Image 1: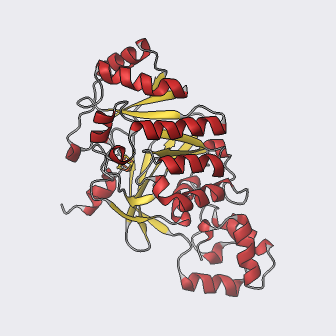
Image 2: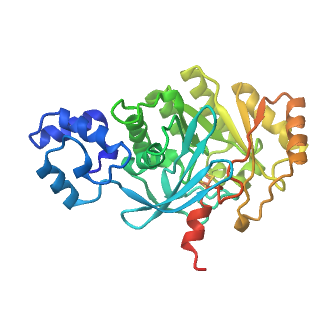
Length: 339
Ligand code: SF4
């Protein structure tokens, strides 16, 4: 039984199934999220014999931290080992106004973007809801988390049911009680799931990892584009925006050698315009194996100016954690490779 994989209703039902009053389920959930609770026996109010049985059956936390890197800017990257030995990364990004945690939804990734370390070996398995939620709790126990972004390893839409379940746990008052607007799912573009998300969870924030506004460039960078080209993905995003009544966000990683010409700025603006979308420009955190180059600040400025001239509304995001292995999948890869 993984308390981090239960909504409040499920925790109550679990308690009832053991012949306990339902409030014991809530007690378990609230207790498990507190700092310093490493065993079921540490959860206040849980009957001792039950806590002993649960502790004997397995550890309270579904993962443990095996490596940690702290950046000068406060970004903390944690490498977690799951019960089956698989490794997964999560990142804590504190700023003055918020504490954001970036979580993974799968071990590895099937999409295989050309600039990403997570996709280099394909996907190993989906994460359970509890394994997703635990990445947040892991950092929440140090400092209260205000925002969660699904931008770590994995394509969230390929693990849709578990991601949705995790979102509902994170939003539960007995869990972290995070408002839906504080949860962002980032996808590389799975049209049917984008439309389904608008029905299932219209309040959360959806971001499309676009990275190129023309099919030729995008298919080279994001191979999923061959299966679902831009017209299909942008069509789904337009339907999504109509349904939820909010403008989507487009993520655009700036790769000096691949997607930063004036023509790329034109096609990006053209893709964003019908959606009224805001664009986040993200200077690349290099991964040596990919061969892509991080742009200089001058190259970033030039591209942002070109984009503004053709009507694109963009913000250049500061690169966080550039002095650690902050790019997705780097820390896991380093740990797995023989030295
Ligand atoms: S960028 Fe995201 S979708 Fe692309 S390979 Fe990496 S984890 Fe997968």
